[in-house]
Image 1 (cartoon, each protein chain N blue to C red):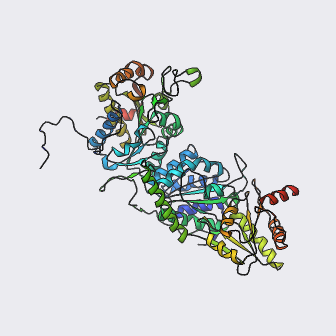
Image 2 (cartoon, each protein chain N blue to C red; image 1 turned 120 degrees about the vertical axis):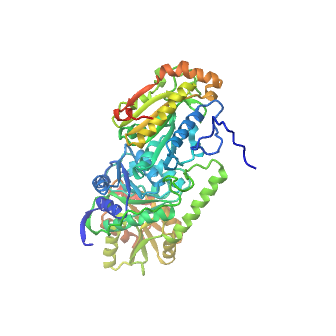
Length: 370
Length: 258
C-alpha cells in the first residue's frame, strides 16, 4: 500500500477496522474524539457495530459484553475517561476475555487539560482497576507504529485472553504524518471455545469474574500470573538506537522517546557516546535488556512526560549498579530536544544528583528555571 | 432402575432451569420470577439462543439456575453488557435480570440509555424495596417511612428522598416497546406477570425495541416478617405506591397474540 498522510487518531481507527474490528463502543473526550468520530462513519458502512455510549462506564461494559460474545472489540478514551473505565477493566481481566483499549493521554490529575501527557503510565501498567491482574500495554511513538501495533494488539489480546491497551500521548493521537495502512482483513468468526454466544449444539457456558470460594480465586490469580510469565517471556518489544557502545543510556517511551532520539543524534554529532532504549511494550517491561545495559553503561537517564513513573521500573532493572537520572516535563508539556540534550551534557559532565532519588534535584532545577 | 413416571404431572421443573437448588431465602419471590422466565424460554423454544446477564445483588448467582449461556455483570452495568452482546449477536435473545439497587440506583444511567436507544433486549426488574444481598439497606424504591438498616427510623423523605417509579419513568422513552409493572403476591397476579414476561420476550424476538417487566417482590428476611405477611405487605403497601399497569405497549406490540 502507498503511504498516505494520516492523523494518529484516525489512523488507529482505520487500522483497527482493517484488523477485523467487529464492534466499537466509546464516548467523546479530547484528544481522542477523532477515533469515535471516524468509526461512527466507518463501522456502519461496513455493517459493523458502533455505539456512542452514555458514559465511559457504559462503553467499557458494552466492550465487556461483546468480548464475552467472542467479538473483536475495542474502546478508546483519554485519561479521565480511562479512570471511569477501570471498574470494567478489572472485570474483563477477571473474566479472562480479550479486549483492546486505547488511551490517548492528556495532562492530569483531575480534569487537567487536553495537551499531550504520559502521566497514565502507572495507571495502565501497574494500577487502575482493583485486584491482581496482568495486562499488555503498548506505547507507540509514531503514527506508523500506532497503526502496526493496533493490529498486533487484537492478536495479543485474543492469544492471551487479556486486555491489551495502547497508550498514546496526545501528540501521537493528534500528529499527522505519512504512514502505510495494512491490507483489509476480513471479519473472522473465531468461534472461541469459551464465548457465551448462545448454547446451540453445545453445553451452556458461563463467563464471570466471581470466585466466591477463596481457594478458587487464588487459583485464578495463579492462572493469570502464569499466563503473564508466558507474555513476559515472549512479547517484550523495544527499539534500540546507538546502544552498542553507549556509556550513557536514555530510556523513554512514546513521544518522549522520539524527542530523546533527536537529542541523542545531536549528542552523537558532538562525540558523546549516548544511546536510546525506547520500550514499545511498557508492560511487559523490557527489564532484561536494561539489566544487560546496566552492566556496561555508566549512567541512565529516564525521560518522560510525567513525574517519573516508568522511572521506577528502570530503577528496578538497574538494581543500583549505576546512577539513574530523571528528566520530565508534565502537565501537558512536551520536552524540546534541546532540553534532553542539556541533560545529556549534564550527565556526561558527571553532574549527578547527590541523593539516591534524583527527582528532588530535578524538581529543584525545574523550579529554578521557571 | 428407572424413575417412576407419574401419569398426571401438573408441576415440574421447566426445561429452562438447571437442576441446581436456588440459594434464595424461604418465601422470597425471586424463585417465582425465575420460574416465569424459565417457563417462557421453554415455551418459546429460546433456550439455546438465549444469553442471560446476571446482576450484582441477590440474583448474582442467577447464572447457576438458568440453563442458558450466562454472564455476570458489574453492579448496575447489565444493560450495557447486554447492549454489547446484542449488537454483535443480533439473532440471539439477550435478557438482564436486575434488582432495584442494581437497576434503579447504581445502574440508572445504563438502564435509561439502553431504553432510550431502544436496545432490543429484555429486562426483568425485581422491586422489593430494599438491598437484599447486603442485608436490607434503603434502596431508591424503599417506601416513605419504611425501616431498613440504613434508614433505621424509617425513610425520611426530607433527607432521603422519594421512591423512584421505574416503569413509569422508562415508559416516557421512545425506544421502549413494552414496559409494564406486575406483582408476584398471589396466584392471579403471578399469572398476569407470566403473560407480561412472555410479551416482553415476544417484543424482543420481533425486534420491536426495549422491553421491561417490573415485578413487585417480597423480602421476608430483610423486612423482618413472615413470608405470608410479606405477601400481604406487597398488597397493602407496595401496590398503592407502585400501581400495576401497562405503562408502554407500542401498537405493534399490542397486536401480538400469545
